[in-house]
Length: 197
Image (cartoon, rainbow, N blue to C red; front, side, top):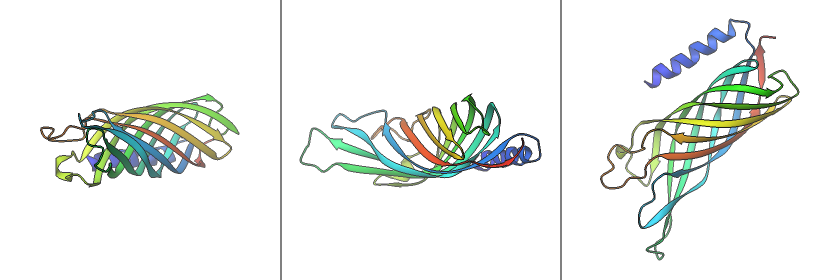
């Protein structure tokens, strides 16, 4: 499944490069905050700051398609309430996020000096590492959907999006069930036009 998604993304990029569509490469870096949808009876999960680095390729003008790939580290803190003498614990999850975005330029377009965009899409998250929990108890892939906004100023852009996981993180939820993830992503980067008019 991972190979199919990546192959489809690369094929779409190659097709766009050979057409007259407007294309821009968008390397980016940013931060995120993630929490889980289910809290245990003894405490709660709180999102802490993680990070992501990667990029995407925007294809189109007023309406655009934008596949991307990012290395993401998410951190969530477990805060104990019933046993305050115990230390809080951080859970660190790392993986590859592949967002597939459809967007609309509300003001301007990719060639404008200033632009405002709205976007949404679906994403896949492929787990590569998890600390303080058993990786075998977690699914290797999870799926999500998101909505966001972006601001473009010349070649610089800033984007913010909120993502809801569509699948539980865990395979076996008999012992502990953290539910689904909810993540806020904020990142910035540059747009590098490579084709179209």
